[in-house]
Image (cartoon, helix red, strand yellow):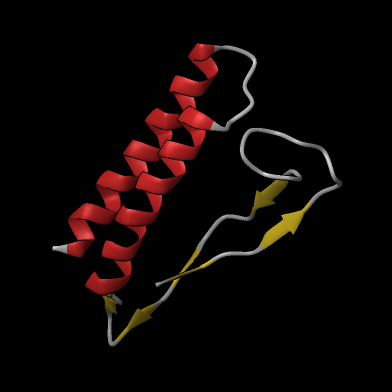
Length: 87
């Protein structure tokens, strides 16, 4: 399990969000020496990332097509991680 802290920034529009934000490094939690796995939660994020990718492609504000493609590639990388944990 990961626990993350998020800092919300001022109302500056960037990409898909109404304001900028940043995440701290994750804190990993183990129970009895093993990581916590939740396949249903991972499957939810696979589907959620599909929606985020669609929003990037249709509503996102980017400096260039290359910037948009870079963001989509990062989402796909994350999606791969969650697919592995979804089973």
